[in-house]
Length: 326
Image (tube, rainbow, N blue to C red):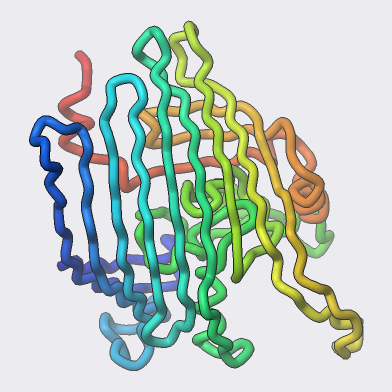
């Protein structure tokens, strides 16, 4: 049973509580010497977001949103070709209306030096029997945050608060707007955070979301021989954008935009620190929709387009102390 509480935005804003009772079942292989591990996990996640000046558990029963989840994890710790994956089904039961399905596969390839490992990640997901919520209602707002992101996934899309984050709600501003004074130091740093889930896109660009289907491929290739944690990465996502209506200046609905399939990609150079706890991604190649997002928001330099990943969930103080070499 997990009880968690903290600030969605470390610089003032959202306070949240999380209750996540779960049952985890380890499935033992017939051969006790097998490297295969399997686990079935059932949990119900309740999240209550509220203003930071409210007391804890304020109107929890009424305001929280609840999601039931069934997840199957499997892995094989092979010396040369380790792999793992998961199959997950989520359904909204309180203040949210969605049925979300996801399948993730990870395959590793150990280099000859035995120190670095190339990785291939595949993901595909879909929304099933989608329910319709009243536009701009709490249900609609909460549910839309769970949509698959065609490119970068940030803290706002981590609707179950599974990732520990600092500055969760910080966003980069549209600095192309002359009325915008620019990013604060917090926005400029934490607004570049990305999460390695769903499409696993390693850039903060927001090109659109999907409430129907997405498939993604992520490649990570460390540079061999060189004793530095650097390498190349590439992300590809193939996703379906929903149909919509375009309003004119007066706010009157004018044009209908049909649903479409989109191919979004991004690749470049990365540096990994502290055994993958922190990673920096510098894009070199990218699709047109990613480029348009950067240009429309004023991010024209290579540095301004750089993203970071801070995996606080991976930080184990005991393991860090144990691995320190004097």
